[in-house]
Length: 232
Image 1 (cartoon, helix red, strand yellow):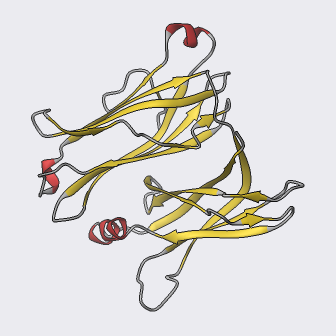
Image 2: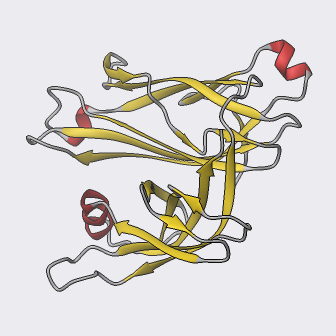
């Protein structure tokens, strides 16, 4: 897959000032997927998942964003400014996953949402710091006979010499064509792992995504994961 530098993109833009660019600031979009999925009250939402890498030589924090949904004529349907990247700060060479969704107030057909734009702004003024944990992930069978949803499960190892708490895991789900499909995030609030210990953190695959896979006769090929804690 051809990598795209997030400077000039039709659907995904990143703002890095010339001064930052001269310092070696650069983010690269590795993969992305835009889905229009059923939401509540017979409405539809536009969901964007993306994998982004810091390909520069300075630490960057994504601090602002603007996500817009457009109709077939390019008219804005809805926007939001909360565009989370997990984790929000990337050291040189690190990757993170982005997930954002919005549901217009009156779109009741999938083709009512035709396209999207996403404008991100990164900065070298870093105030959020994260420590990454050792982690692997798998797709497990449904946890009970009452559910048909695959279970996304991460095994996280605390290789430090102290207990850690509130671990966040970010699942990147890939379809049967080995393309990024969807990103889900879960934080184990109020749960701790002693030094050298292991914890399982998981959640069901989003129901709308499961229905999308079934409708398109696709399956999950693999699940990648990033696990981290906030160390500000």
